[in-house]
Length: 131
Image (cartoon, rainbow, N blue to C red; front, side, top):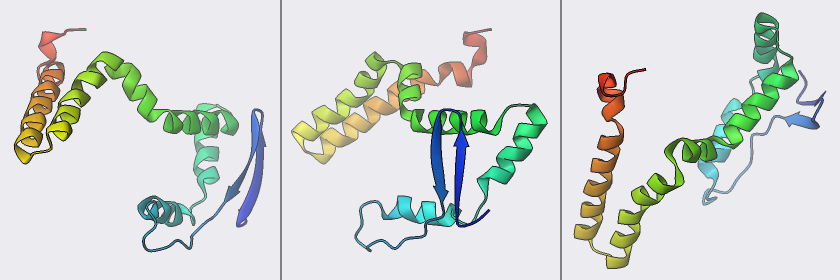
């Protein structure tokens, strides 16, 4: 694989590029850019080619799946959690920020901690919701 490979698979044409910067020290996306640079030396197509051969799925289908799943990860979480619960989890934080005190923020943390604990009941005690 060269520094820039051109790959075309069905839906779109994407040019893979190895990128390692530079970026400014105060760049708000510096951590993400550092992560991009850390993966730049790797050749993802060798792994995908091996997987493609092993499971008999085209490389382009694997790339489509990986990109779609990664790009929609937060949306997928929302679909699983549901918009009502997402708003319930966010409400204590919004209220605490309106009040603006550490006491309100700690109360919000405790309220959300309890909600998340409640959501984990089926994970902690699978007999509650059998298959």
